[in-house]
Figure 1 (cartoon, chains in turn brown, yellow):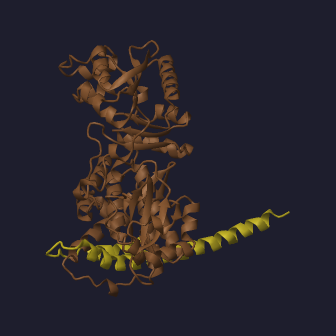
Figure 2 (cartoon, helix red, strand yellow):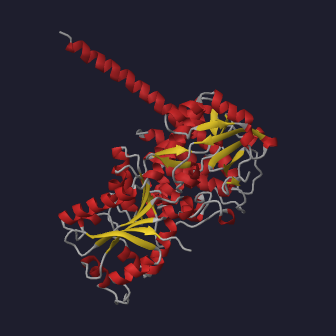
Figure 3 (cartoon, helix red, strand yellow):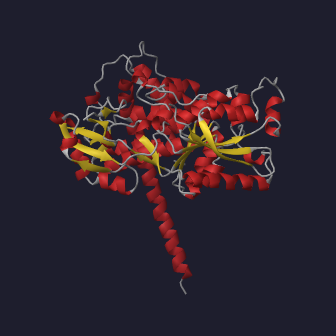
Length: 461
Length: 75
């Protein structure tokens, strides 16, 4: 028996997550017994699972326990296809995760329970919807007790979302720096002064940050501070309103109108769509990472063939549009994420092991890199060989589009810089990728100068 | 909360905290959050109470209005 305890599962004494024989398991400790029983017996678990707000689990035999002496239960939660982090979510996805947390807290209170955590990392997107994955986040509600997760909610959700909405959407990346959410004094100092007059932000951010500073050296006497159940419900209602009033329009960014500005003729675009579909069908990819997906045009081609797709893009506007399209159509097969491929999500947290790199969190059947290679090679000076090596580390199958130097889009990239890219030729591309992949087939994309390759990783001796 | 008067009460409490002096140290933001929450829950509770009261009044009047128009629409 060799269990692998999840590196992010050490803060909560209620239990922990570990892997055994390819299964993800969660041990519930004796110390959490009354709260776990409360979750089940109050009917809250059934209600939340039925409405898709909480991940379901199967109860296992105690023989599966990792530490038998303290184990109360062992559960096997339904597996989330890909764990994503708040700094990889677009604005609307982040808002939906916040509202999901508040809705769960509201329902929990109705059934005599309460959320003890409001960590954004506890929410994941499954089939296009936010869902709570930490079954041990609940505790029995004690009359008069303040909401212990209030500060965490403000730091993990309201703070970063208000910065994204009222300052700059790119400030969501602060979540990558601050593991337990963005400190409220920082949020307060960055927000425009007029937000002090906004009821929700004035209270939950500015006055809250002020109170934190004011009482920083005061010994905690939380037992003396009582919050009525009605007051707590009103607090949750107020936070919900504050989140709902935050807006962001995806306009004026680099790629927002990309598909209106391509140099593809309509028939070439149709040809590309068909080729991508043919290649995907040939390899029968069940999971696909579409890197540089823009608004997910070809992710939908893959989804149409039954694949579960993660659409990565560097542009917040493109990811937002993609997410809104997923939400509007109720698409279950696409997860749009904000990833800069030249600086992908790093490993962060304690010992750099709490939150994994994107490559550590999944291995798709295929990677698609369409109309991307020139941005990596020419805009970012990444040698072709290094791109090939990284793609080979992600998956054994690759669908990649070669965009030659004569292409008008590449000429645009070269217009304001010296051409130092002598290796950027079709022969150089095939040689660089040939080190890691063998080409199964390649086709010219209609009448364009571009070429689409289907590649398979070569096993190194 | 669309009513302007309903913003006055929370506004006063927020300003009281807002204009308070700085503490010397920054040791535990959780203590401030707990104390602050006890205050703000009262404010939010008052706001929600007024909102619920107001919506009941409006609902009563709109029911009455609707009832009147229903009466008038009867042949």
